[in-house]
Amino acid sequence: MSVHLDAPVTPAPLPVLGTEVCAPLADGTEIPYAALDYAASAPALRRVWEDVAAYLPYYGSVHRGAGHLSRLSTDLFEESRRTVAAFLGCRPDDRVVFTRSTTDSLNLLATSLPEGCEVFVFETEHHAALLPWQRTASVTYLDAPRSPVAAVATLDAALAARDTARPALVCVTGASNVTGELWPVPELAAAAHRHGARIVLDAAQLVPHLPVDVAALDVDWVAFSGHKLYAPFGAGVLAGRADWLREAAPYLAGGGATRRVARTADGGVETDWNTDDSRHEAGSPNVVGAYAIASACRALAEAGFENLAAREQLLLGRLVSGLAELPRVRVLSLFGEGAHRVGVVSFVVEGYDSSAFAAALSDRYGIGVRDGLFCAHPLVRLLTGAAAGEGAGCGEGPLNAVRVSFGAGTPEEHIERFVRAVRELTA
Ligand SMILES: Cc1ncc(COP(=O)(O)O)c(C=O)c1O
Image: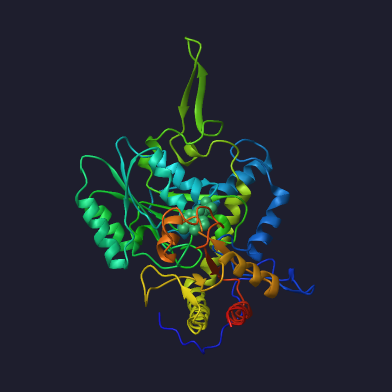
């Protein structure tokens, strides 16, 4: 997408809550808060809040009652599943399972792997995508590639050497939560399938910024979180192929996931588990969370990703070119010059501790960003040049970075204020 940096920026296309909240500054004054930490948790869309508020008087149990509001809530929950499936371009036989988050979704898939499964994952992944597999599979950790082409070649070579008698899964991010850089998902999916492996897409940072079409990308599963998609009501999604999920033991044991439970002659309990989406949704479903995600999906689809992405790229261009003028600022990048990215940028400032820098942005400018290793320690260590063992925890260590991130609710003024603040703090 080519971007003319001096083109006018339209007002934020999707109004969010919190724009009138004031942040206290160190000098005792206040300023409207600039939320520039969307990659951690995005503010709620006003539309999502209104939809949830309109529903709440009708709130009732899901799949558990014959009363009017239970039936209405059950319909709403199942309708939300269909809305998410349509938003993700799911294939007719795909499942949409409501979870708590991306972390929960990937852990669910990790417990659903077939016997003997091998998992292939780049060391650059968020911990939610890096860590769940070692509990249930043998894992091959792939070295960080320095270009999208190298990513495909690295995966291709690793899969070519695998034992094809065993099932295999590749887990890959769509957009990095550290650099914002886009990964070559269709090409990685093609490589996985060429070698008889399956692929799950961690779309936590992709789905708020760009369309994700499961069928067109040809990924087997996709995982994301509601709270990064402007729907902070405690739900997430795992969508994709039914077979592994159907054959796996239920993620949680409990009510709602069972067809029949009966005592056995030997004094035990025998259970027939459901084989549909509810198999992995034991316990009372989070209908508010699911409905909020569906509402966000509808709002994003109506606004049109083309418009949202074009505006975001304009703001991103201004942010990145503003930072590029500052000699003490180094923007972190895995793929280097010209890499495509979403509205997520991490950087370090020479001579400045990142935590102190983030605190100064808050105390002096009312700007909220993230500092730390962003739950992607190996990647941040690689990009900041830290030795293994340094910067041990999120927020600790000398080689943390600062991350600024934004989206469909961000006004131009927040980006301008941020660039001005960084310029003044590094002068
Ligand atoms: C790329 C990526 N994957 C997974 C996660 C985990 O998301 P959650 O904390 O909502 O489970 C995050 C969160 O920052 C992320 O950025």
